[in-house]
Image (cartoon, rainbow, N blue to C red; front, top):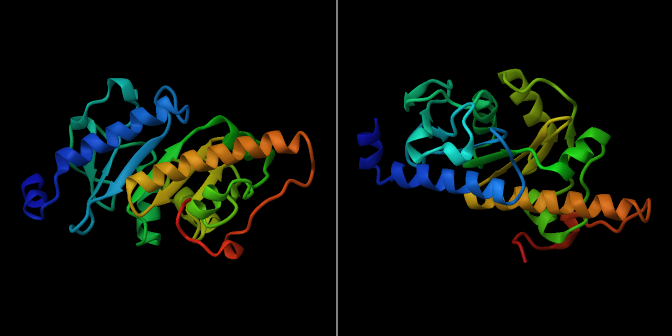
Length: 218
């Protein structure tokens, strides 16, 4: 299978390394710890192939070869480890959202604060609004290791690029891994600002995506 991918011009080794780089960056930025979170990408130019982080392995112990190649049914095509326990959630997103080519799931503190409160993360910062395309909704708590969760999550997220899983974490999507990751960072920054702002006022100034008139981050 890896030979087939190579013939398409896709460099699977480079893609695996990029995923690991963003995994390590998620720890550096305080988005994840221990074995929490997961990252995946859609393999370009090949139908029904995806790369995703393995299950139950700390990022600082992970190597590029640990990143697993799966199909849309979450079956392992290439890899020595099993895929993330939330692989079916990723597959639900890819099936529902053809515009999505990368997914980042993380468990940052301030995003989780609003998940516990049950209040959306509002447009307190302009870059977040541009990346997410609106306020970040909160999905009511469900166990996340099944396809039904993925379907319910897609319903909650709609056409937005982020959703908070109550009592669990944050999921962001994008046309590429860089944008999906930048969206995670932007949401967590906005969540932190919102928490501080709410300590001072019940009516913080927030932005609306449809009224900004721009679609690219500043």
